[in-house]
Image (cartoon, rainbow, N blue to C red; front, side, top):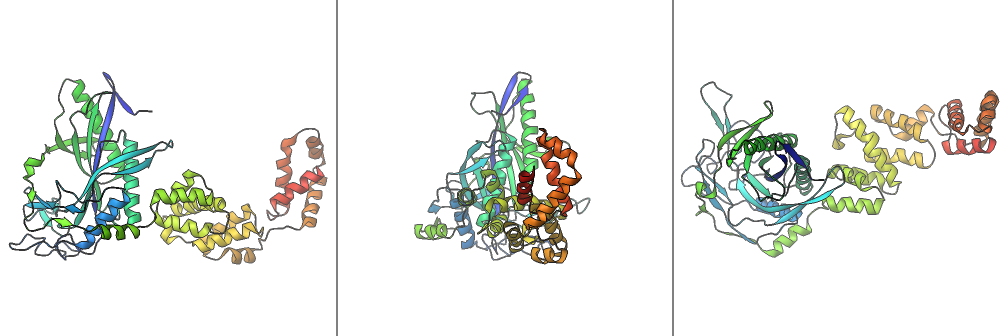
Length: 482
């Protein structure tokens, strides 16, 4: 179903394109040897190149180029063997040279695609226009002093990948799904950590609205949105604002805006610059970038299994539903954990325990899969006890909670607490006979047609045997007697 916003004149369609700035994982910056790590005292990760000292020449970081190519391959995009660096000229306090080295007409990565899946199961493909490399600016801090702004150049020169989508996104949910999928791919590839809180992934959101069947109208760019929730919210707020402008007979101006979540509004920042405003020209200090196809092929051979491929393999190899597979491949660490639990065991049962009980426990304790108090081997050991009928499903829940608290193995807990499942048919038959004798009236009711009482008898037998009886054997014994 098409997502629309109702205005005074009827339904309006949203058109969204995203420009995602992803900080490249590398030890040093794009054109200098200074540290690219996050944090540090202000202005301690700065070289003379980053500070814009006269006569300092940029030297391209090969690993940053490799990371951009890996990302392009992960986005199933075209890798351009020849690309070029340009100077994008603008003047701001945190840009020491007065220009940013970027790629404009000749980016390193061309068209690609990202597959997203929505909550209702709808699958859509969002086009990638390009991926280009550029250096980040520094950071202006306006809250350190009442009269002055401070500048931290630690971030200046850090390598960024700007990933530009086609205007294919039609609702906030699609924007959220696209960003989550993009972050997932980047993390799998190890090219960006996707940490939006630290600013290593942030989005510029281009929004316009139109009536069904119309060509695109004027768009506005919402700058530097640093959470997926805010991106989704900003799209709705800005689209609603634009609809009101058009319906009141006005014109939407192409401009850059800021999203203020506390006031639930976007505010004008500046009129939107076009390419000529930046006076792009090829950087005279950098030769055109030429890469060999053999190197690209080698990088491709070294890529990990990507999320979509892993999801499809889980469905085929482990026989689990597509939704469960999508949850399990959300992060590489979760997928690795599940595979260790599932290998050689009931894969569906393993999926249920990982996505159910384990995820619930991690949420309760504020942990992630990487610091789970129950290792994959330990959880697999517990499932082995269920499979060989040492314990039943109900006892397994008790054992699992004990494992969380103590870190003991399932086998040790079962031994310590005497939780071994009773599979002795004689003991089960005796318990069934005792329950029948104590509930003769209900036996007559059951035989008179009240089939729903069967669950009552199962519960009574399990209670009599302290929950340790094999449920399947209890069911079988009861069916014979009743």
